[in-house]
Image 1 (cartoon, helix red, strand yellow):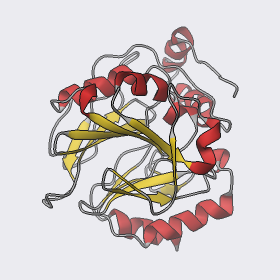
Image 2 (cartoon, rainbow, N blue to C red):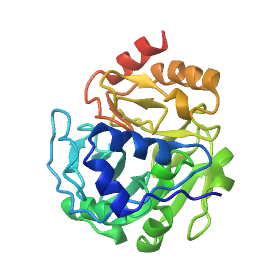
Image 3 (tube, rainbow, N blue to C red):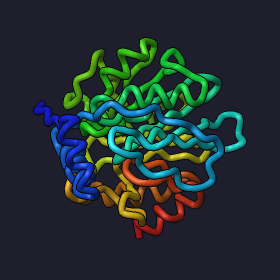
Length: 270
């Protein structure tokens, strides 16, 4: 696996050029082959409970945007979720009964921001029992080794078709459509990568869709064509997701959709 690294100096220089820096990071982080972009050190993310709208945008150079939190539902079986906004990509913390699952780990060097997200909700690495990767790309899997090293009691998971493309500090467990992890339903969502998966909290109506869906340009879209391995499968995934029941959509790139998300996905699928 080839590793592409963006240094702190290059990151800060490009960040001063505005949107161009985001474009550069998006290309490096999301490119095929699981290439990894490194993040500079960042200030701790903060957490705010019960967010009713989009979380705030990215912070200044060398800092992460604040985390945002929400409860999936009043159902006692639902997870509460926290977004760890890493600037151009997000990781998510799903928590139930004091135990946490981390969904995606950001680029290399994102573990401190994820730790800050845990601290913001009163937890630490000892509470993390599961680390789920939606897919193999380096902007989502780049910190998996560091996260698994810190979360010594956690098991890591990834879609079976992406398994061999990611090297982690300990073996990852392959999962497929219909499997259950931490009471969460694994939904096979191929297209962006062949092994791409999404994570559905059926009790709380929360879908974590990785890069199968996105809102980084504003309106809801499907997988970014530039980084999609199978366009027809990606379109079929949109249709599939639009038939599921969920209220909240958490995406890898862009702002969450907090209400009416399934209807919007169904409309996108046509």
